[in-house]
Image (cartoon, rainbow, N blue to C red; front, side, top):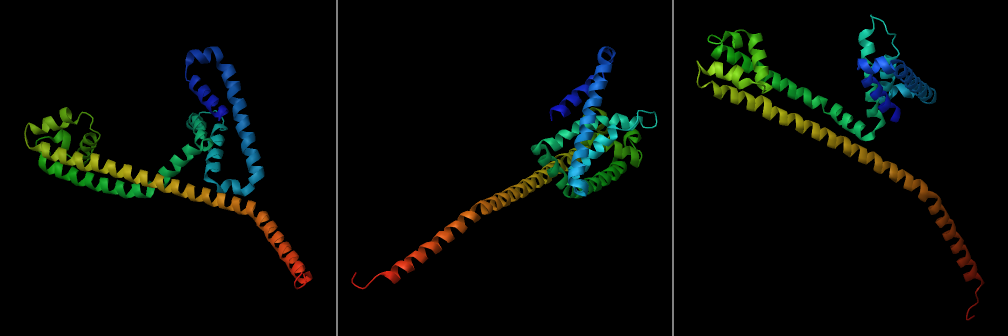
Length: 255
């Protein structure tokens, strides 16, 4: 984790021309040393786990991130070389809580797909309605389907929609505010809350799975620890029964 954070700092310093002019060679050497450590770590993990290494999604993620950093620094691979900053994302695999958050986000993707489809459907319907209502008087905003979609997207972001969209339209259609407020409530507020609900539910489900796995591990550990104790108790119980029978057989009546 320390090396990953140090590497992130180095990558940030490399964006400064003044720092690179003074310490560029030192930073490059440190970057190569850290990268060599990452390569040795992954090599050791592959040798130990063999093919099981590639069945673990987090291990594959580490492998891809480090492999990108090994791409030669040429014009052809300049984009991939720029992606070497992704090494910083190895912090996700190093911190269990971050892994849990990312796992929850990934688990929420199927539910998000349905919401994205819903918002896309609403987006398309409102775009066509806007063309029919405002296209003739405001062709620069709603003259075509493409312009209407773009305009409604800016409205959905709530960035300057009142001055740039609503007010020009309301000059010819004073009641247009009803259309825009209805659109914003449906697409921005309601759908955003749906997104949040899906993510929260997915994270809770992942947390529940983790708790089940932890409890199962504790149960196995307790069982393993209790097994020899139970065996010893049974052995002592059998010995006591044996002594009791021996004593009862040797005792005389009235003695």
